[in-house]
Amino acid sequence: MQIVADQNIPALSSLLTDAGSLSLYAERQPPAHLLAEAEVLLVRSVTRVDEALLAQAPRLKFVATATIGTEHLDLAALAERGIAVASAPGANADSVGEYVLTAVLAHYQRRQQLATLADKEVAIIGAGNTGRAAGRRLAALGLTVHYYDPPLLQKGAVPPGLEVHDHWQRVLNSDIISCHVPLVTAGPHPTHHLLDIEALQSLHSGHLLINASRGAVIDNQALLTCCEQGDCPGLILDVWEGEPAIAVALLEHVSIATPHIAGHSAEGKVGGALKVAEALYAFLQRPFTADADSVLPACPWPTFDATQIASLEDLAALALHRYDIWRDDALMRRDGGTAAGFDQLRKQYRKDNPRRQFNNQRIACHNSQQFEQFLQLGFNAVRAQS
Image 1 (cartoon, rainbow, N blue to C red):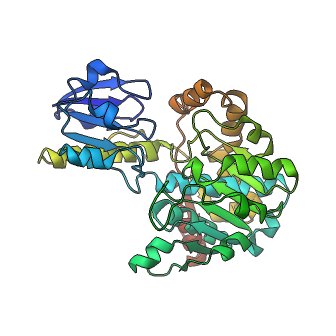
Image 2: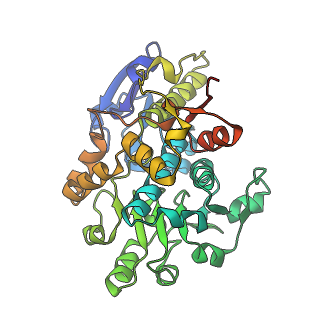
């Protein structure tokens, strides 16, 4: 098989050793000479697989995206041509959950308000893999977490133990609002500009609004207007409408700004690669046995004792030590204001020092309460030796 893949999907040369001939591309769209021969195309969200691309790829049989969402794929056009499609749901959910956890801790720590967290109510928009990963971690901090997901309610598919509702005003009344939905532009439950000028005007500086899903879920121009008018909510934005050409004026109003990298831990990126490789081997009707451990390097972090992390300040210090989100924020403010700079930040994201997930951090726990809390926060909770 002639396989064409985005060079920023990691470990493919190791995962696809006997699947075919692998060619990598570096820009947003694959070059025409590769598409002309491609039988398999492996992409990320930056590549638009539409009629224009398909017209250049007459031999294409299989397309997979190493992302959760598929809005960058023209599914109707692919189906019309009989091209098989796969995605990677849940592959980077823990990475996004850790991003939200770290960002919340960093935001309130900088404002010396960590002590107020236990009184906060969190609305998670979207009860899918990433929404639940974020909600589980924030609940472990002691926050009250609920999920807004009308489509899930309509399907009657609410996972046990989750408080899922369809009350929009309850979302807007919550202290923290975190977006975890795909970009949907049509149908009964569109998410494009879900947070529009009316919704944004109901928020104020006591709110914290987080978007780690798709930029256009929030109307960025309306958000900028609200911020310039005065009482702007706290903002944590990892995704931006119009990427890679963002509304640069928003940067000065954002508490934490990053270039669409919430899911880009080493584990999250390799997880996406594993999903597309597994789907390709299933398409080829061949066995696939690789796992993350076979391609990820060891992470030699020392074990911490739970007694060393006795407060939210201690937890914030540990989270920021393992994931310095302020470094990502500083680089975004320095280089992310141009389309080329934004794309470069994503392409080169922590290539010198990959971001590793908290499950590599062992926490020795002395009782079941500690064990359960650190487990829900995403750490590798273990029983302390007596």
